[in-house]
Image (cartoon, rainbow, N blue to C red):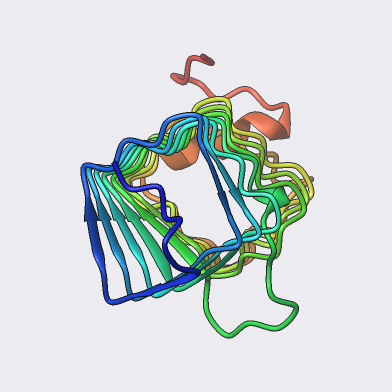
Length: 203
């Protein structure tokens, strides 16, 4: 087990099979580090900073990320259920999305009112996620399951929903300008129009 007590900053390191469930890590910096098959579920990252890092096949469910900063961080094949991303420390000015998710489970997470333009959720399970009032312009939701996720006053302009499934997005309450969708899932957008379509059965 690694408790990260020996120094304040780690660079170019790989951490594998770390088991730190329900633990607290304070004010540590990680730069160009890889976390592989680690378990940080129900732990607290308080005032930490992750730059150019990867989390591969990790469990970070119910992680508390209070005042923790992320820059160019990739989550791949990881479980991040119930994470409140509004607690993180986000930059005032950014050029690219600070986090990306590939093949992750992020059910019941919270992105309320966050400015995360160009964020990536690809081939993810994102059920019951709160995306309300967030700026997700040019985001990628490719092949992601969005069952019961909330989109209200969300900026989805230019977003990519190709092969995404189970989304319910009110076209009157969200900005969908130039967003991309694929058939037949795009038909779900018509449910907000209160119209009847012959041959289409409402879920």
